[in-house]
Amino acid sequence: MRHSEAIARAIVRGVPNSYLQATARYFGSGPTDVSDARRQHSAYIAALRGFDIDVTELVPDEEHPDCIFVEDLAVVLDDRALLTRSGHAARRGEQPAVAAALGNDLDLVEMEMPGTLDGGDVLRIGDCFVVGLSTRTNLAGAQALRDFVAPLLVHEIAIPDDHLHLKSICTSPGEGLLLAPEHALLDGTLENIAEVIRVPAAETYGCNVIVFGNKVLVAMGYPVTHSILEQHGFQLHPLEMSQIRAADGSLTCLSIFY
Ligand code: CIR
Image 1 (cartoon, protein in one colour):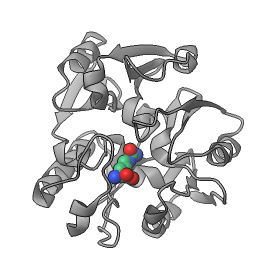
Image 2 (cartoon, helix red, strand yellow; image 1 turned 120 degrees about the vertical axis):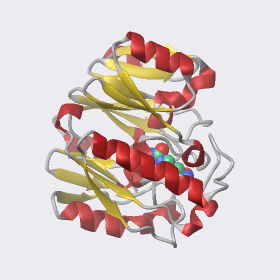
Image 3 (cartoon, helix red, strand yellow; image 1 turned 90 degrees about the vertical axis):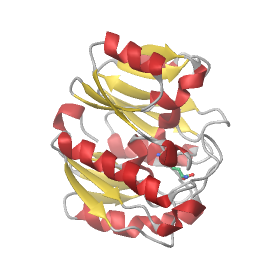
């Protein structure tokens, strides 16, 4: 994961026919339409390419309904990738194809037991990281991340049980800025790192954005968040995300950037 100005490449993975069986316990109650999911996923890839990202599309894995959420499988820093041990054991089988693709360009480091960590719990902001301790990411996983990114600092934050990952509810729309809902992550950790833009709880899903300079990919349908981002000078690129959200996925979940 590099600073946004330096992002050049992304790995994504196609939507399998089995996507209707994807796990859903938080934002969503399960996808309902694979064709729609594919349309939304394709629009996402087209948007990345529109930002000059060199996108590698891995073939879907029918055995793993959640395989589109590649973010969870690795954390990239410069020319190395930490291959995570997903906190969802059934998702670990998604990793070999992703590791093979990353291994073409990066040195790989494997997370060891008893660590578990999902990439969705790892947020870089400037020269430090925030890791969410969640149902997917444990203390040993956070320590493995710390070892991997040293000497860069890692701050830990507890993720409330009603949210899947840190980045399900908080991302950075730009240097020195974080976006988070008004009701969560209030222990002061975020405020010590950056200016936190708080949005209404009803727009929690809208807190997951991807920034490219002053342009930001956002999920469609979160007007308060959008207007705050526009006031901060960002140019918005909204994407329909309903079938991705239905499986608890957000914009960042669909890519590994490097
Ligand atoms: C899961 O439960 O693992 C998937 N249905 C959603 C993963 C979303 N990934 C992410 O937030 N990074």
